[in-house]
Image 1: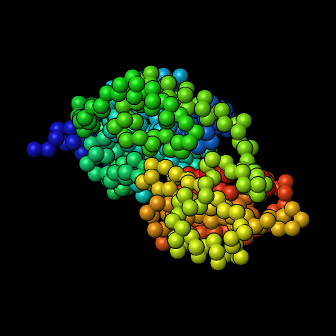
Image 2: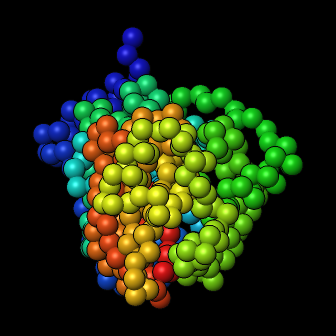
Image 3: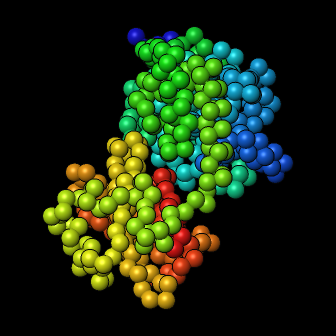
Amino acid sequence: MANLADVILNEVVKMTSAFIEPQELLLEISPSLQESSWQESQVYATPSSRWRAYINQISLDGFLNWVKTEYVSHVSVWYSSPGIPAFWEFVNGTAILLGERRVVLIPSEAIDDRELEVPQEWVDIPSWTADYYLAVQVKPDGEWVRIWGYTTHKDLKSLADYDPVDRTYCLDVQHLTKDLNAFFLSYQFCRGEEMKTAIAPLPELAPAQVKNLLQRLSSTEVTFTRLAVPFSTWGSLLESEQWRQDLYQHYLYQQQQPSQFLNVQVNLSRWLEEIYDASWQAIETFFAPNSSSLAFNFRSSSGLGGASIKRAKLIDLGMEIDTQKVILLVALIPDANQQVSIRVQLHPAGNQPYLPANIKLVLLSDQAEIIQQVQARNQDIYVQLKLFDGEVGECFTIQVALDSYQITENFLI
């Protein structure tokens, strides 16, 4: 027998369909709201979290202003305003309360609307789960936001594909309801129907474990905080308001500290004196002396031979790509007149036979201008920059980038 709420909803939709075409919601964002939202976003620690906060803020304010005018006045943000930074610093999405129903806005700058991607936190942390999830598209310049579809927690759990790489539930557009009229009809007439799937509680964390997590996850060496530990651990940490706030404060403090170190450089002139930083090690540390790949790359490429100075550094690309590591190699050939020729290569580490596809190796000037770059293809065993020359006193930067992850090394000749 069909669910009574479904029957009522279907009948109401039938009655209204003759008069109303499926609707999406297009909300204009005023310049003043854009400006105030951008200013408020500056409390966040990184450029990516500041932008995430900005698009969430304009989506939230635009939707609240509209829904209070058109539908219900008893609408509020799920958590208090002082607590918002602890959410948006790490996770995309905004939860609001429409009466007894929780609704999560998921903003995105994606041009196409083929699917809705919901961070796992909003689906699998028991106290965070929502009744409805609204797909929000934000125009790049922030002039408007478009709410183009919705789904329920039940549908996300039963119909969405879970992506373990970035921990998101991806729901194809065919499973989304694109009629916002239907959303408000469901909200009004189906208040007794359960929209959520039961979620198992997350494990409890010991105080000592929490202390360790706060220190570890706030480190500047962690690129993607929400992906750095297993989800059950991460979810348990976020679910506690106190721990969530502590993490945000630790993270903000640590992210602000490195500013005094941003200009720290690897002094290549010291390499000529056989003085090396601890993180730059002999190439034999990473490659066996009889490594055919190493022998070919450094003995036959561009005249680099036994007289060149060669050091290597291990770079961890993070848990979001299955703990993939690569090795950055830098080789020097001293020339006359205080000049040096420099070769830079990128190799897979450990037992990995190939570099990650699309990883980039970039040479930047001291003004952050791209001088040259190379990108790995499928099954590349290494990539290298063209041999370049420098003089004593010059600076340059090497950047390794993959998707949203990047790391830079600053050098002084």
